Image 1 (cartoon, helix red, strand yellow):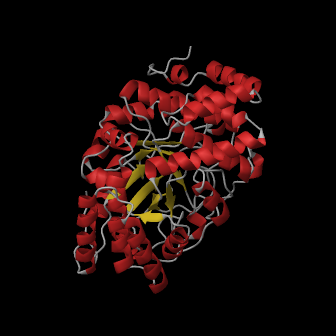
Image 2 (image 1 turned 180 degrees about the horizontal axis):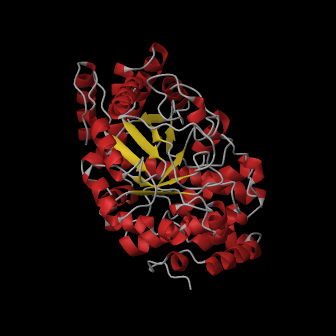
Image 3 (image 1 turned 135 degrees about the vertical axis):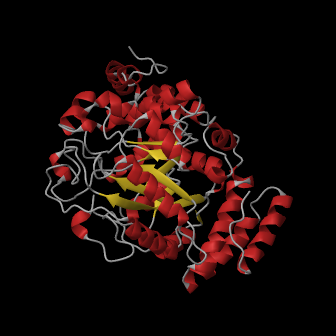
Length: 469
């Protein structure tokens, strides 16, 4: 029985409900009146149910599909403006006891194993700061011996403790395996940003096949992890499925049901939703799975997610190349990685390619990515103010749902961009960025806020750092 308020995985992610939803979507996809009614509701920017959004995803009327894409971009602009948040992943260890068939870290893959020491993590953090990064996502395989929670906590302490030149990592998101409420409390107390955990697939039968052994084989324990994280005091959680493994429409509906569950139980949905696709890696051939999707369908999925959950941050990584990422920005993505390494380490010294989790498709430097974004009129943002000002969970969602980005996040984005331009940018990027900042200042609605930002921009030029609203 489908029950979004239940704490049981198979009740808030109901196989029968998803099956009925997909059948309903197929029946209604070419009913233009029904599709129009859903689009009218979507324009109110209050979100859609998983069933309504599934109808839009199934719709193959070219005119309506164009409306979906246009609406997704408009909603992203309404909630997040033209800001694009930047981050980098930092892989700490690829030791893992699971048997995930899509991941080269699985127990018997034969990949070279590596785990960073605290000294190496310090050096990696310096290198990331020297690139200009302020926000990281740390990653580690599941291994209670090599990667216990104590190692993760020590690594967080090391990263936050590095102050090199004008650099500082101000927010560390954490992507580690499902764990206990007690361990989530420890992560909260260590000052993490968002806790991220990909479901990979919501199809229980497919999930158990793809995870034949190891702790991750337990579907319920994994799927209920976000409940434990939020019960442990972590306000911001990030969802994601790995598109390309199973039926994309099933995953789409399941992911939105998960978001509805979090909203129903905790009063706040996911802070972020990531949209990765399975990619080539050591011993992994994406073609061996049955769920491959085209670039065009991938973009449509992202557009429908943006419409269904307008408040959430949407993330696309360097798994995807420049052209795909460019299109995804136009349908609602609001966060991207830049200058990424998916090997264990690789920022301080040349990466060890045989420790990578997957191949990077966008190999540009962070500066090249920022210059690219500026060229399209986006504001590259390194802002972490909400996290450090306590605007997390329902407090951030209230700010976002009231569409107050231009009075808060937009000024913070401009000031962090100014920091990057002053400390790290190439001459060409700095010139383009300074022009963009002047243009974007005029978009700040409140004159008082605009005046404060102008003053702070001058202070940054003169050596001060870390201004925020």
